[in-house]
Amino acid sequence: MRRKLAAGNWKMNGTPEMLAELSTLSSGDSGPQIIICPPAPLLTRAADVTLGSRVEIGGQDCHANASGAHTGDIAATMLKDAGATSVIVGHSERRADHAETDAQVRAKAEAACRAGLTAIICIGESEEERLGPDCLGIIAGQLDGSTPDTATADTTVIAYEPIWAIGTGRVPTMEQIIETHDMIRANLITRFGDQGAQMRILYGGSVKPANAADIFKAENVDGALVGGASLKASDFQPIIDALAAS
Ligand code: PGA
Image 1 (tube, rainbow, N blue to C red):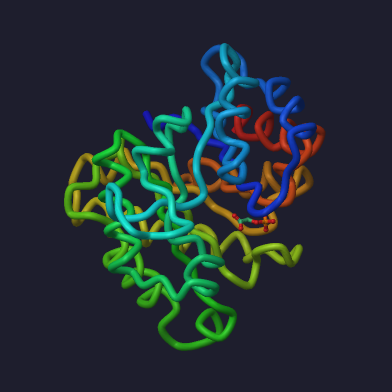
Image 2: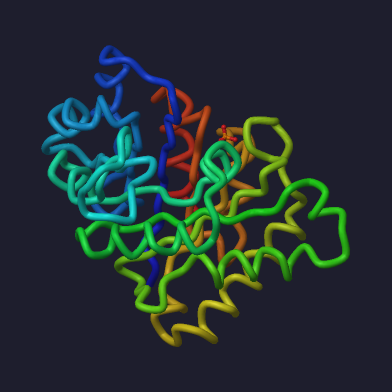
């Protein structure tokens, strides 16, 4: 059984005041895992606020190296020390803004794993690629290139996030979501066997309270990576509830 996961990506948003809402998020005793990824300066405060609650804390990126001359970067071990249990790697905004490649994303996921963090590895196509002839092949290539050979269901979560759906209010059709998640599952099983069958696959891109229940109906959607709608408990809690009910 794959445990469902609702992960919130605050991106470059958030204030200390907003952290108070975090500890109000809940999912019942055996409900979905909840992870919030605030900006790095808020991590330790977020860990304090959520201590004893259902909410876990994650980073939004990490460096592939354990330490060194990398001004502005953060090592996976530092996230772990700050109280994180996971880290997002390869988000399309990092790939676009910082020209991150699949190989770099894979190295970051390996660093996360070495630090004892779960890597939430993001993949997803541009709109042009969605309209082109080999959309699934492109996503499969990202999956293959960004996922470490040593990945297990404990160390790795895959987040499928079509770039054109992020922050736009547009979502793929259910057929597209099902087809893509089924392809990802098949590839994970081919490469990792039973571990691939147990790895969680999240959908991300304009998940809202109004569309969450439908998206969670897909067999190989194990949860969501949520941006804008994770900033307020009044938006994120209904998504967690829809996941719990799915
Ligand atoms: P969104 O962002 O929910 O605001 O579309 C999702 C993401 O980028 O992870």
